[in-house]
Image (cartoon, rainbow, N blue to C red):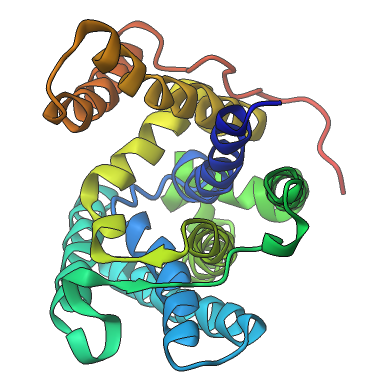
Length: 296
């Protein structure tokens, strides 16, 4: 297996975890989170700060998860008095504020230069280190998928879907909407932060360019392509989108296009895919399954 293919599969697995995180919020609970990259940033910067101040990797993981949980709960708190649309705008704004802070707090985050030199996982296993990381990322992805499946097929998951479709009915039946949203934000934040920690130790670098808004919309495209409220679908969407993104540089080289083409083409591809699926196949590749067995 070529190093390039291992790299693309590994990144696809990490984005699959992020897609599962967003799918819990948007697909099953109806929360339009356009600031997921901020929670992902808790993961990457948690790992980066632990390395900068010479703490062990496990400490960075714990710090990243705690930071993500606090951020997720803050998002949930903000959304208590906002409709879904306004909450989406608020999360996008918060994510941009966090990115600006990360860019300007040079003494803490390294500013625009970021933090480099993070230890790469399994570096001592060369030449099998790439496969080892791919297997680790795949294992985390499968674990995240299993957790999400158990959650959405439980009575709690039924409550999530009812809140998504009929929030007033859910409230009249005794569901604590604020509590359910907070729990979902905590679980999805842990998933996003875990992906962020792995991503940071994969790239061996952390910087504010990892927190730009197009990253959030790339994850949204994966969820929309795969099929909202379908965990298998969003993982498939992550793999499809990541492979499409990975082959853009080859198109540039084949047609001898300028280097700026790659960044522009990725933005056009993300927006074009989202628009095409919303217009032509809004249910995605694997639509949500209605009804069926509900595990208890």
